[in-house]
Image (cartoon, rainbow, N blue to C red; front, side, top):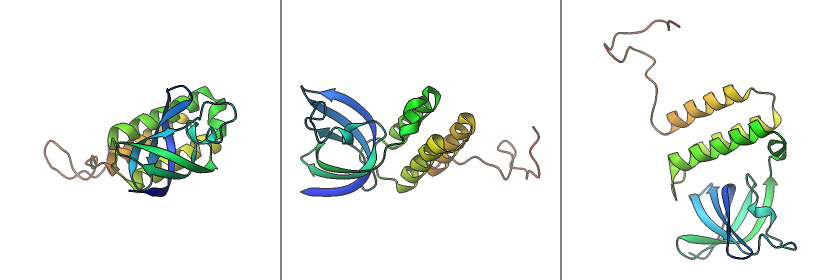
Length: 166
């Protein structure tokens, strides 16, 4: 595969070599992929912005096997307010880990990507409690992954339920 352009968000990053950065990017078309951002840690690097945690945009890749190379990046959103609140940043990191666990590598799922981006947006720019965001994200990612809660009948006797008893 030659050059590819797709939208994606950086969900993990680590230093690689002298000036490079290894990224795990949740992409629209390919799921989670490993990619190298060459020279991203150097002061005058043009690819430094593409290697920041939670940076969303259009990536141009060159696929050379298991590890992809980033040719260029056009940023769309950085979710900057998350970087100033420790609780929200921790929550965003938790969402990244859940996406990584549920999808693993090269398993594209546009519904989970949309859920993830909408949840990050709400976490960064809306006044929503972190606890309710966490619970709703967990429930929706479970549903999208095929683990639906049984709400129409009791799981032990299959009798119909007309109301929930708290």
